[in-house]
Image (tube, rainbow, N blue to C red):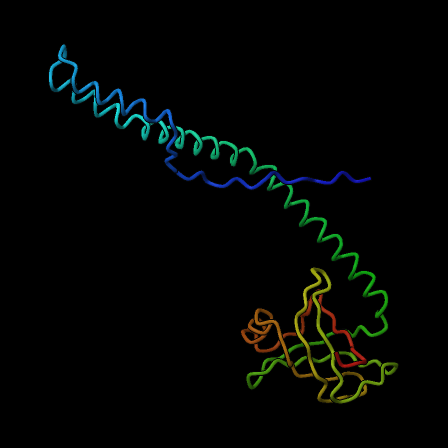
Length: 203
């Protein structure tokens, strides 16, 4: 049985908050008496009194800074574990995606059409695919284009013309990156890793 990976609890940044407790009265009481110590000069009494007044705030401020340092340290230690975790998740998702599409392609392998070329004209992307007499392709039939290597959806097309050896289709919903590439090249016949799939249901 595969061991389940457990992520550490999220580390939030500590907030500074002054908590008033009974022992915080002690520095205040001592500061009151410090102002009346006759054996000290006035400036020393003032310094000691102010220090005692600020002691509770300073103490909690230093504790807060310590918590921030500990949080930074823990986050630094957690990062490699989180990075490895997400890398493993991405790898597993990639394997599941590849497995799914392999099974999918095996099911619809008879509906796969070779793309012979693509052309950008009049603001639209057109492709030419090899005709398959067994599929009995007709106008208005829908086909989708995939990158078979990375399993990326590249576009949906509608057949506009059917010939004996090939069919022509116009893009309905096309990946902007691919369309931009074809637009730049104007026309291309090199379609590596790409294939069109006929959808009998038109979906």
